[in-house]
Structure formats: C-alpha cells, structure tokens
Length: 71
Image (cartoon, rainbow, N blue to C red):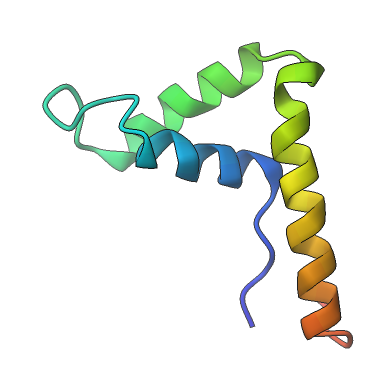
C-alpha cells in the first residue's frame, strides 16, 4: 500500500507537470527536486496552504480506503 503524499510531494508533482523548469534547462530530477525544495522553503504559509489542504484530503481518502494501514 503506497503512503499518502505530503504537501511538498504534491507541490513538486505539480511543479514538474507544469514544466516550471524545462527539460532543455535541466533534465535531472534530483536537481529539479532541489529547485522545487528551494522554492518551497521560500514560500510563506499562505502560499503553502493549498498544498497542505490537498495533502490533508489525500490523507483522509487514504485512511478511508485503508483504515488499518500503519507505516
């Protein structure tokens, strides 16, 4: 059973999907994660809030699907 994604992972997935860093500039996902992490660290709580809400929703769905799941 996969773990539910946290707020940063959801942000990073969207960051990559929107091609904020074109593959012509950087194709190594380790570096893209570093760039996304740097942006995430610079965001204030209000900017992070949509991702936190999405993570909470995903966590609730995961708990409903797998009530006995323990990490």
